[in-house]
Image 1 (cartoon, helix red, strand yellow):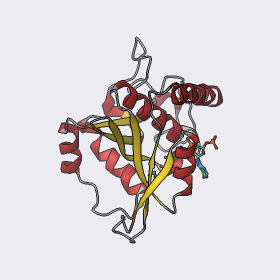
Image 2: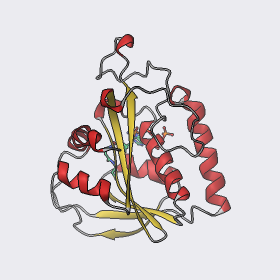
Image 3: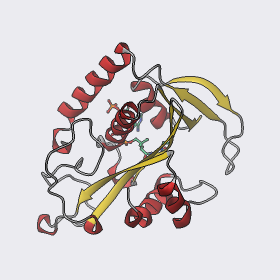
Length: 207
Ligand SMILES: CC(C)(COP(=O)(O)OP(=O)(O)OC[C@H]1O[C@@H](n2cnc3c(N)ncnc32)[C@H](O)[C@@H]1OP(=O)(O)O)[C@@H](O)C(=O)NCCC(=O)NCCS
């Protein structure tokens, strides 16, 4: 994520977290981009005028890689994307690296792009980034009512280890605290690799 992506990331926050308070601001994100503990990843769709799809189309018509600006364990040698200014940002994930813990601060998509493998792709990239930054575990908070996100996290080995009562100021909802086992362990690494392979097979058009 770069500063020019902030307006679109705020749009995504407004869609994905409509009741969140305080609302995200440009200056808050600008500060986060300077925060040496924080890393933000965006998932951007190349806005190819020749495909006639426009920005709102939720189908993937471009064959170019969605991962070109996204962290990937095996970086691609070439980047064919047009300048960032004409990319359409569809998802964002943020992580804070604190000692040996990578804490996911946000992960969200535009509504039109759900259920197409993108949330999982962002989570894969975030865990991969945590591994690259030598974190030992990945943690997060999630609303007790957010079954969709919990299902995704459980798939990747996150387990509930506690609760923060009345954590969310909009409605006083509790948060589940979820964490992985050591992401350096052979068990986690092998399960993570298997899930990545399955994701790649299922969603070949994203790679
Ligand atoms: C959570 C979120 C990122 C998931 O992204 P997504 O692109 O829709 O999910 P994917 O298509 O990648 O699905 C990946 C996995 O998530 C889970 N999942 C996704 N949608 C689900 C649903 N409606 N019900 C249950 N599980 C669901 C499944 O485990 C799925 O794996 P499967 O395809 O093998 O069943 C997305 O729904 C979102 O942005 N939600 C709003 C913001 C939010 O709640 N963020 C989490 C804050 S902690």
